[in-house]
Length: 453
Image (tube, rainbow, N blue to C red; front, top):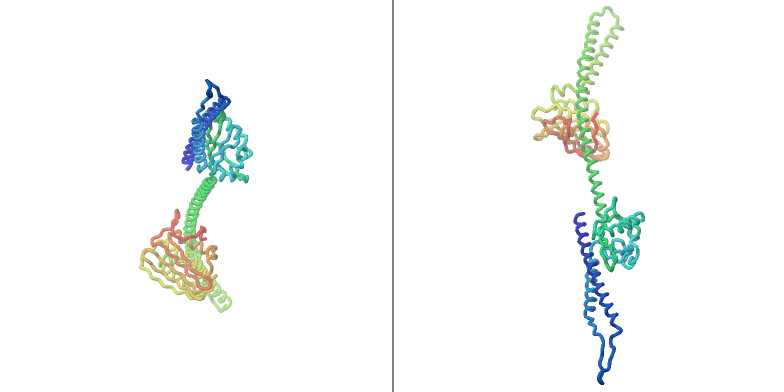
């Protein structure tokens, strides 16, 4: 775009130079003709009388040349005026005193004033105050170079001033020519405000794109970190559950057996001691049950021993027993082997769904559907509660956590809800998914990455 502008300006400068040169030659021819006429005008019509008759002695001046020269001048002036006036770029000519002598229509539009208002005035009126002295020096320096034209360059942005005082960026070329012994400087300029704004917008867009790419990369890294944390958390849960079961559980079981052995060998009718022993055995039994519950909460053994479908049914029964909310389960599976990552992600998402129902939904029943749809595992959790707004879903850490779990396995989580109409959460994960610790998948539009901790 800029190269085309420079070529166009250069061509316009050459045309203006040629016309100014021809105009100067024509003016010189007309001046010479007028001088000849003035030199002979006093002798025109001098009369002499010869041999009784009248005879005239004088000069016969042929004015045809003058007439042709004037006509040629008018034609060339008209041609130049037509070219300059029709030019799309602003054209301003100044004399050696830097006074405006040509101001075309495009210049009127650019500077928002009429040519009649500026003719004979200083070019300074169109220059920023801080640039006027520099401009004068450059014009004088250009006049001494002997060059016919050149681009007007500036260390910074070249600017001009409209009549209303508004400064705007321009690009310009300048040319010079000799007329009647003096120099005329012609500037062809173009208002590049729109182009400058477009370039600035492009730079801003590029900056936004770079920042977006940085944020996307950062999001990938955060998702990778989230996936790693999920793996570490599940491993830690499994380890703690195993330690509780193997160590604390066995210790409590051994204590209970020892108490039973003591009870069998107690003598006499010390009812108080026997009651205390029974109470101790009950406490141990309660401790064993508590350890089992803790272990099940950390990592249900049924998940690893019986598989995902059995674990879903077990979790639904536990939920109903704990909350009193009816939970119906429909499981349809082909018996295909599922990866540990998929099993864990699906089970944890189910747990979070049921937790949200018990805390927030005010529901009386929940339906859980688990099936395989080709190469996609589908789980649907639907309640008849009060539902919630979209804004609430975007700010819920539990929902964000479910989203991240689904994404980490290349799946998606869809939520359908509205106030008073219940909630349906659909999970779709490719069968065979492996937790993507170093990348991410899925089609969710969640804008946040939150570790499901």
